[in-house]
Length: 360
Image 1 (spheres, helix red, strand yellow):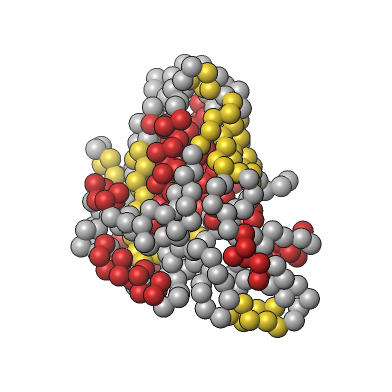
Image 2 (cartoon, helix red, strand yellow):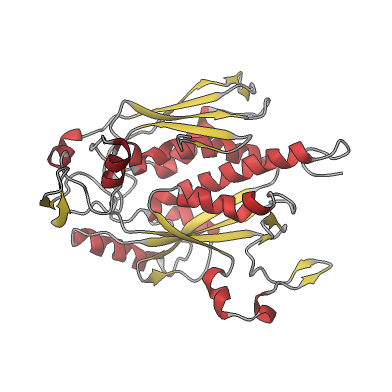
């Protein structure tokens, strides 16, 4: 088990390092006949790419995707789909002073303990740049799920102590922080700019809402829908927590307050976040992830070197003062990978009288 493959039927393996020649993904299990063009994938990568605004890293990458296999005349063939994203703007010299040092808050120390070797150039495999491959694969999953009526909406719900209170989906892509609350966006931008000016970084909360998931998707006990989504989200390097529906607030509620009453027309409330017993209830799926502050900051920090000697670490290079704006499409992509796999698993368990979409 290498930990580089995700999924059961819709299986994604990512490869590549931050400062290597390229990154990419191989997807096995994509159904044949799905209409797929390079543009379908590129539009999602453009949402994640660096250099979008002054609030993110200024590394200049086009993140232009190449489809190497699995598509013929605009449709998937059912064979493995290989996607490649070439690195163009690596500045490995920025990391020369870190060859022997472990960066605080990074995976450097843990990787060295596991493998006895590490790629210090931007963190290598542990770099956030690895998520470009996830977004590419997630774009394929989203295209597949769109045909089934599944829609994704993720946004920055909070930056530091600044939180939004309303969700206007039309506003998300019209501000650099990808906030859904027009009244909170400017304050979030100022929060990020203040951290950046102080040579520091700031954390955030990303909320994701998914509509159109049919009741019944998800596997019982160990492969619950929320458990699999949690695994997917926590596999993103900077994510440190997740909650569904009311989440931790449910711990302060009573059952009479937390239960979602049902009527012939559907659920009255959605405290459960669209998941009951680990299986989709048919209500909107709602979850939030906590994103830690970017560990690469231009401040002197205490650390040790590869020999265990105390050192002072000063990180140079180009880094995001807040990860949330570019992580929004990553959260959507990972959620799409989960649901694409569960959709195929649901289809596989359906009896012969059941239509593949779940209709009888």
